[in-house]
Amino acid sequence: MNSRQWTVVFCVAVAVVLLCVTAPVVLFGGVIAAACSPATQPSTAATATGEPGRWDAEQVGHATTMVTVGAGMLVPPRGWVIAVATAMQESNLRNLGHLGAGNDHDSLGLFQQRPSQGWGTPEQVMDPRYAAGKFYEKLLAVPGWRSMSLTEAAQAVQRSAYPHAYARHEAAATVLVGSITGGMQACDGVGSGGWVMPVDGPIVSGFRTPERPGHDGIDIAAAKGTPIRAAATAVVIKVACNASLNGRPYPCDRDGSPQVAGCGWYTELKTANIVHRYCHQRVAPYVVVGQQVKIGQIIGVVGTSGHSSGPHLHWEVHDVSDGGEASSANALDPEVFLSDMGVTQPAEG
Ligand SMILES: [Zn+2]
Image (spheres, rainbow, N blue to C red):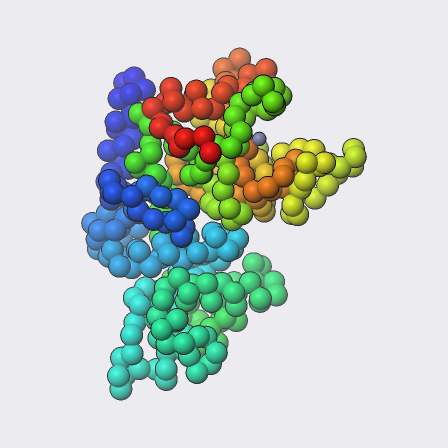
């Protein structure tokens, strides 16, 4: 098969896993418009989880909200799994209202948060975005939560009478979160060549412009914390911090500046003979070297680490068919490359 036929096969496979909608769907609080809605039908969700009929549209939708709120709050993916597993136990991923006489105290919503215990008003804890945000707020305040077992971390937030019930949802939550992040792609924006824009936002600086002849990529403006998506299905070949000030190493976990040199926290992905580089991430990238990522998968979040004057993604594309590494000598104009791949881009902003 040629590449175009493979693309068709890929898109059909994607369509089986996802319900791609043609109308713009607002995700990430509107940051990513015109995106593809992750599995929102029972059959498609079942395919994604490998457990036929287990999760329906409402349940997958709530889990998706937890992932997007978590990504926006810079919660690492482990936290997303903890949130989803907790909600599986507390509400079976349903936004439960008051159950009358059968209600447990004044518990409400996905996480069964109690207004009387300081979680918020009844209206607030019934808002899935608020409830997820509140869960993460408490989780992030737990010292050492990242090295705890799921039960320990969830219990530190929830203080449940049945803490050991959380652990039995860990595998299912891991699979569900994986299917959501792997499927978080802009189906509308996928070009015929199987590429998408890694971040939805205006291109504020182009490739090797007269003002910046040494600029080997494009700058896409987006708010800090905006998820960065793999522009194509790829393998991760580099994850690193590259920043220095006056010749000395400079941290990547803090904002950089025009005086700081380097890419900050960055990732390189490789698809066939193309290396794509993602610079200035806010925190350590969410992927590891050797990992396979799917087009649209969240690989990190936008920041301004390294040589950067404000939050944006500096994105490069390199043709390494000569077998070498990505370098200035083999950099391609990303806008031309995406156009060749059939991706339509936003106007220069
Ligand atoms: Zn740049």
